[in-house]
Structures are given as structure tokens and as C-alpha cells.
Length: 214
Figure (cartoon, rainbow, N blue to C red):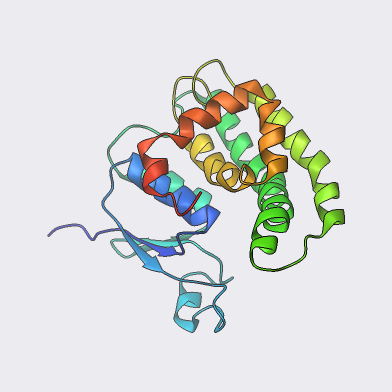
């Protein structure tokens, strides 16, 4: 009996849905993106709460096995399907990968995407007013994020050196929004290692296939 085609639930604009899509594409996994817009006027669909009790995206299903939380989904995708490994074999390198993913989740996502991109790009485009105080407070935090990532980078094209890992796939969608802001582009320009990484990841096939208007 053929295995069920994996299904990813969420919206293409979502940073975290894109992270999961990048992992699936990098592994060469044929999958279906099932649209779920948690920001629609009707709110989170009731049926979807069975898949994610907190009403966030993405959620995932493969052969009846369900997951939510992006880090869990991407690790499952890497380990359950053939294809190039997206996690280092070395235990310390794998710990560094996890540290970068945690840093991005805990400190970078809200700062780079919501406090800078949304306030300076998305809101004005939709006719809203920028919260200048919020942006001003976010810029020093963004600087710490970028300088820390720059300091953790290994020699090579990717964050951990020669191997593309889940750390790169986690960071890329956040930077895709961040660099749409003038503040983001200016800040990235002062970090030559990260700037070189960004030029590499943004031209990767998986990134271009998931480009929803970057």
C-alpha cells in the first residue's frame, strides 16, 4: 500500500509554514499544502483546532501521524524521509544548530518580523501608522540577534559551515521579511558573514519555490 502524501496545514505567507515547506522541498518530499488562514475575519477554523489546540500554524500529518510545532515537524521530515541530512551528525554541531533555532524563535522572530517588518513595511502599505517607539526599541535587539548569529557562523556558505541545516531553513523566512525594511537592509549590510549567507540562501531553489512576494 502506498504511503500517504504528507500534508502541511497553514498559509504560504507564514514564516513558520515556510520553514516546514523548505525542509520538505530540500528533502524532495512530495506534499500538499492545505490552506489555513488563522488571520481571516472568521478566525481559526474550528476543525483545525483538533490539529493544533492553540490555533497556530503549521500543523502536519503523514500516514495518520500528526504533529504541530515547526521544530518538531522539520526534525521529523529530516529523519523520516530519504534525502540530504538537514541535521549535523556531530553532537556538538547538532547542539549548535538547536541553539540557533532556539535563538531565532525566542529573540529574532518577533523582533525582525513583527517589530520591524510589520511596523515599517506591512502597516504603512495597508494604510496603518508605524509605531516608531516599537521600532526604536526593536533595533538594538535586532542588532544583538544579527551580531550573535554572525559570531556563531562557521566558515563556509551556511550558518554551520559546509552543510545546509535546519538552522538555515529556520532563519531564511525571517530574514526574507526583515530585509524588506530599510532598517533591516542597512543592518544586514554591516554583517558581512550574514550578508554572504543571505545571498546564498535567497538564491536556493527551495527558497525561490516558496517565494510569496519577498
